[in-house]
Length: 95
Image (cartoon, rainbow, N blue to C red):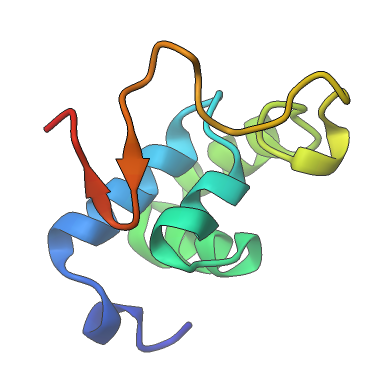
């Protein structure tokens, strides 16, 4: 994911970072919307953030049930909240 700056606009990179910071947004949602796997999100976060901020984020995210689909309960089927507006592809309708 070394060429992510060529693949995404600055606004898209900002949105990926924003979604990664959100506790309730799983990595699967980022992958669905932008095609970026969890490991690549971590690389982007490492390159775009100050080292202390990155360490704080990693500590908070590791093992968090809301960020990792495999840790979620069987009752959670999707990654969107019922109150969230429709997300399709790379367009977010709430903007």
